[in-house]
Length: 89
Image (cartoon, rainbow, N blue to C red):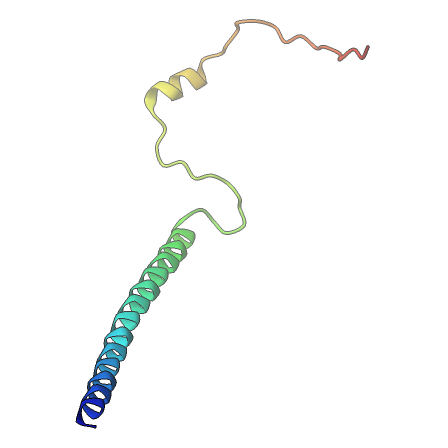
């Protein structure tokens, strides 16, 4: 009778300790997940407020390299544009 009583007490104590450890672990992981999700949300909100004007749909360019400016300003007279028609067989 004493063995069964000790076994039940030890089993109940171990299951209670295991459940408390599991609760602590799950809460800490849930908190990490929520913090990460909030960080991503805040980053997205910051990016939207500091980006281009809402609804403009444009692309904001902060820097254009000097070589690209020179190429863009130069006229390209390398050939003529030729219209073509698509011929169906």
